[in-house]
Length: 150
Image (cartoon, rainbow, N blue to C red; front, side, top):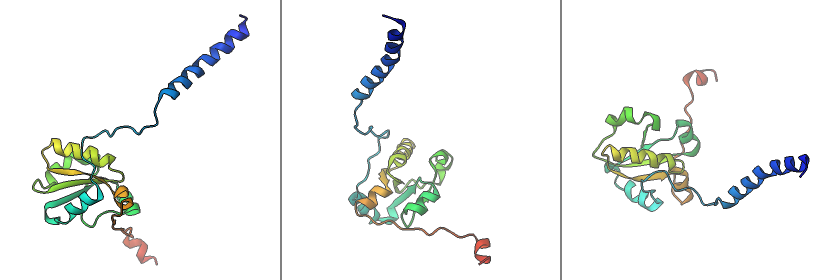
């Protein structure tokens, strides 16, 4: 083999190895990284029918809640702040955690279960709406200084 053939083969080997690795990977979605039950629209609606025993913890950022919509009454806690605010969460209520597609909500639900809270499951707000559920649209708050300039 001459030097150019050796160089060409050396350049093609990594490409062939990458192609073989890519061909063996599946297009199946990854398994969730949480243990919490993902609630269906029907399950969540049944829980909402008893509002005095339910606590909805929305773990999305306020801008996500404003843009996508949410639920009329909820407690908003960011996942990074959860451990610092566990004492604010009533233990006598059944908890549903909410995020856009239940991924963050599922992880937060697992943390709450580990701390002894009664968690019914996780819910994705966008999944809930796609299944026929109704979200509350929240108008962004306009700062007082902005309304005074009008």
